[in-house]
Length: 211
Image (cartoon, rainbow, N blue to C red; front, side, top):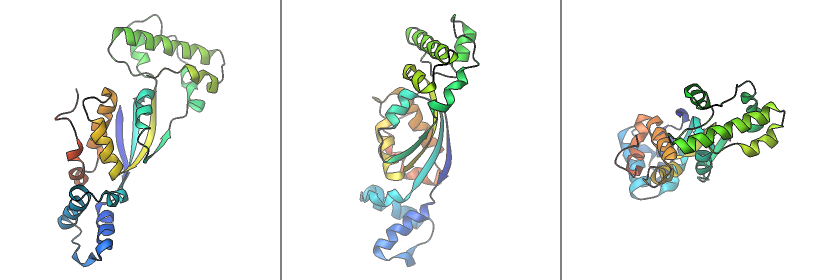
């Protein structure tokens, strides 16, 4: 998968919002003092509504539709997802993914997330081939999409505020989380601006990322 930060809100917007509450703009230093203020109010004192002034937009490519389904459960976020209605034709020019061999596995990996599990990947590639055949036969995308396997890759732009992102990282870096969304959570964290990481480092619920 690939995760790229497209846009983010500068920290001073959040500190300005906090200082508006106490009319303390004259104490702002546009630097460490304000950064510490955001951490104290948002993370220590748990007035997390102030963190909602910080927004992040990510370009996410190569996750499965299964992962997308879990991502969509984080409701305080906006998702613009690659449309199957308009993009399934990408399979129309593909040759068969069968019989299974090194070459077909490599070509299939462009479209589906493989798990390295023989039985799972065997069935996933057969499902991909069934989808390819449906598209080749001229079945409309809106009908053919009903046989898209959960492992089919997609991409999206995902926008989320800092409060919701903290919750996402806490839940999705946990050991019990789906491996793929754990990888996504760590990739999102790594893509954050360096000066913002201090707001989220305590949200990582495992000692180290998955390999």
